[in-house]
Length: 71
Image (cartoon, rainbow, N blue to C red):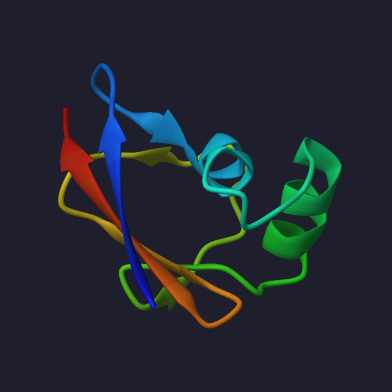
């Protein structure tokens, strides 16, 4: 399934995105998923918890895709 997520401002951090979309129930769960290499940004595993994501990027996690768009 694909989720479209509008970013307010210039970027959103990867851990905040996982929490905001409901893919992770807490910041701790988001940090764990990222550290375990279960999150991909633009089809590449990204282990940076605070990676700055911008409109146009795609995050994949747990069978879901989140497409970032400008608000």
